[in-house]
Length: 245
Image 1 (cartoon, helix red, strand yellow):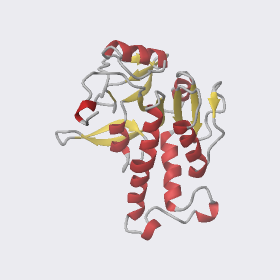
Image 2 (image 1 turned 45 degrees about the vertical axis):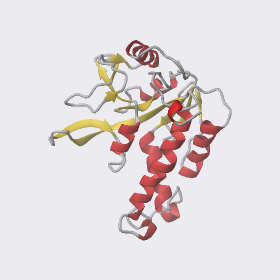
Image 3 (image 1 turned 120 degrees about the vertical axis):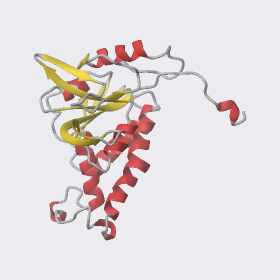
Image 4 (image 1 turned 180 degrees about the horizontal axis):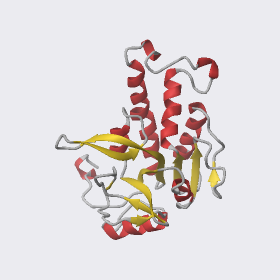
């Protein structure tokens, strides 16, 4: 086969990868536990009440990394990897780069002082994300396994394409990595309460950062099956990979 014979010319659906963020108590972890054959990667010690498979509490990057690699490359039957939460995972990675990595004796070490100072630590952190974390998560997705990154919400200044700065709710992700994680995601959903109803917003508003690559325009119930049904209704006929759910 020549290189040109490998050109793709059909749409197809793949396992979704994205972020669901919201305030405490809105139901993010419950949403993750309700995905297809989930395993929760517990990075913040907040999933003990969930009735689904989950890791022990992973308190540092050296504990998190083997789980990511096992889910990316070992044989297993999980259909969704839920990281609870991506903001805490990135903090553990930042601690690893700074040289802290869960050791209280190293609490004086900082990103600014690490790797020779002068901002080198921030570049090393970005390298970890670009060269290890995202490729490992993509290896999981390429096996037909969905990846859901749960995140807390925070208020952020967002600059529009027209150069207008707006204050919006957004995932609480390190400012140096926010754009990277949003661009990588197929969807960024804002979880919110509307009266007694838990909702998932997948389109950007004046108040919320959100997006999706599926053409979903409606506000959904905060439920995995509703999300997967909306994906199926808005995407072309599946032609190749397996979609979980």
